[in-house]
Length: 237
Image (cartoon, rainbow, N blue to C red; front, side, top):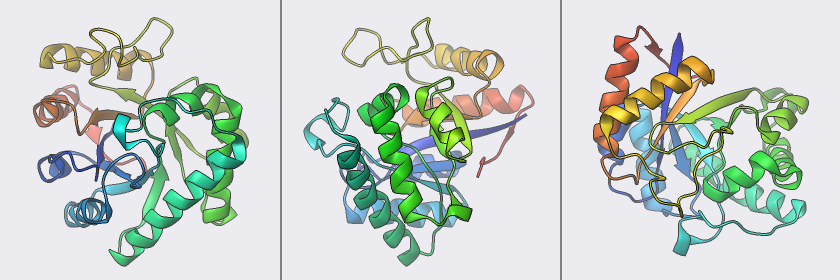
């Protein structure tokens, strides 16, 4: 089975140079929740160097909380927010001679778009403006989510994603970061969860957050486990 391994980069976490050779897709910050033109451009150059596919990673303009606090926005506000971020990243990527191949919302935006129509449509409508109808980008998100349903309706390929370093609830949603033990720290447990996500949830891409303590060690362990299980690591886009 082909499995993609992705990480959130360009955020200024300091792990990009170590993570980029280990992954197949990089979710590059658009600069609202974290990072700046320099960290973003550096991530794009690293992706080009290692042949890693690049996706736009738009988030809320809330750097104090790293884009992980939910915001109440109307659909037009969400669309404008995404237009500014994805359009800006696309321009910088073109300057670096890198092509954007997918989009994955960040943090609280990711979760609100997974369950609320206005947030999902705001994102999808922005993509419709930035890219031609025959070049609609795949969208990455939680399997079984509202975003998945709407993305497919709007003719986007949807890539179901699992998280290596986040704990799950029984309903398939993530345990909020505000709750105890929301982040996995044991490498063995991380590997076991990845195997479960691939086997039971049918995910096509696995994420390790670049700002998670031990991210590089986790990615190395996940890579080894997937390869040992007979999977081929390859970007989905």
